[in-house]
Length: 223
Image (cartoon, rainbow, N blue to C red; front, side, top):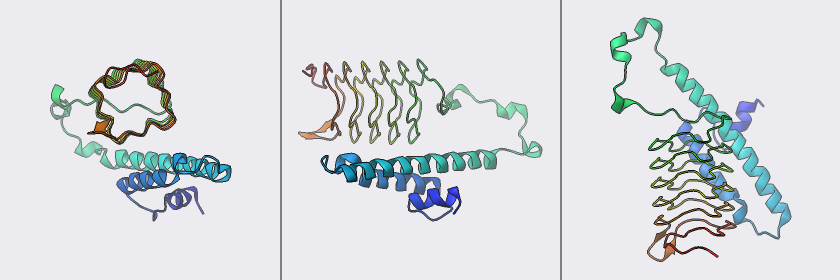
């Protein structure tokens, strides 16, 4: 079996599945094998869940990389069909910021109001980056470093921030509905006005999160 076939099998997909199918399969399997769903005293299943997540993450990353590269090649115009220079220039309203490159140091970068929805930013260094107003819905940010980052008014709907570093981060007014902040370090973070509830129902996963000294949405400091 080739590596490609193995990646599809790990995600329980048929070879040739679309990028959307890869993303959906990934989300389904992460939900099933999330360690928080396994009893803490069952060390065998905890280890199995961690191994499964590692394999699922690798399969998704490899398939996303392959499909993104293929789309880039497929969408590249041939020399004979290239538009004239006057049509290649973008107006300011059309310009979009490029997505963060893998394995690059993005500390202090400006991604304010950037559309990073559904991107894989896991393990990246985005400390002190400006992500104010950015669209980070459904973005995968496992173990991302966002220490001191500006995430004010950012849309983090259903974002996966498992084990992320959010110390001293500015999350004022951010939309955290559906986000997974399990195991996240939120010491000293400012969550004033952040959306985390619907009525009395908490809609953010904070299992194992460190909230010492964090300013909560109601302005109270977590002790």
